[in-house]
Length: 496
Image 1 (cartoon, rainbow, N blue to C red):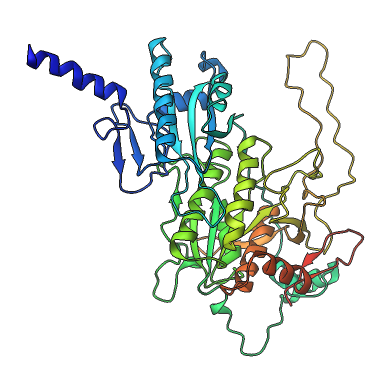
Image 2 (spheres, one colour; image 1 turned 30 degrees about the vertical axis):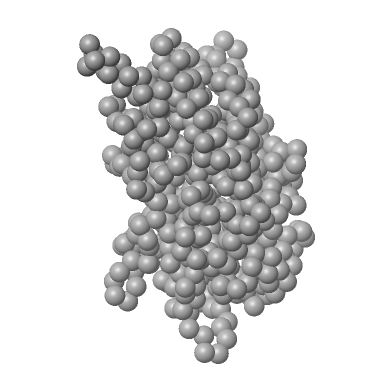
């Protein structure tokens, strides 16, 4: 009888203490890849971070079409108060385990925490810890979780994806334009016929630009062995970085090559502004999705904060985000993280303005572009004019013929062009920028996605390990921009 009574005790302990090492594996490194557990995978956590115990299947259902989601599963972001004790944090996690068990009992399986996006570095003085995670539960549970005393912020994701820019064909010109105090159509045409030049100071050694500085690129996968990234020893300047979707099946996407081409303009050997910078690629694009999830962008920024803090790269790092920006809560949280975590470290975030030719305003915001802490880059065309026509009439919608099959009633759109507004910091070349492919042939790209890395590369050159965030912004805007030669209200990158 003694032996029989001992067994229930052990089983009860396993049920009541889901955080014990019997039930939850403790990892030696933080797991940034993927969401949730595979079948038969054991729950895990990194140190005292949030435990991951929800399933990948439930995450995929929450991300998928509503027709396949009968229980209205949602991705729920949870940010705990930064001053909690470990006991308080663990009490909250145990409560989340109980909720998952309760849902499992009624047939809703696989709910729970699916992604840890907490920072493990020691917070700055007077700054709270960043303890955050994503969970999968029926959407109505967001309000229940938000009522927990340990929770600071909580909300359900809208599954918004963040896009990248479009591409077009056209001739060479961009690097000459950012090195001059004016640019015009005659200057462009002269270069078409006779080549382009730019001025340099004495004792100028271009190959050293960006040396000892760090470029983080949140984008699509990067070809780390592209010739533009190889040093004199034929070794790549790209670190391992972080790939949130390392599995590849060979699916062709319209965004293939985007991250590589963006990085070449910022830090390529022959076509980059800072060819000596160390490159840290961060892939947030799943090859089965047209865009990237704002939750992955938030995780990427958290990962960057850890790398900068742990390696002592304060005042020596730039983050390039050649993305469209978003309107959901996770995009706003990314903006908050930039302001409260990255700016104090002297990390400069450069973001594309976007390419849909519309104003970014408080009434129609995009995040993180709304932040004064972010350098937002609009577009200039090859004639020195603003790229796009902000006064262009909106394209009308063609009427649907009587008795025609039902069709989506798409909203009217403007022709492609740079977004604008008071949030846009400056403009840079964004049209027909030539970029070398791996085999040396050239392809021309258009979009503010390709204007942003020109600024990112130059900011790397301004950093010296001592200049802080406001110092860099003042130096950039006061000494290295000019007024445009045409009737528009945006300063233009002009390297002095």
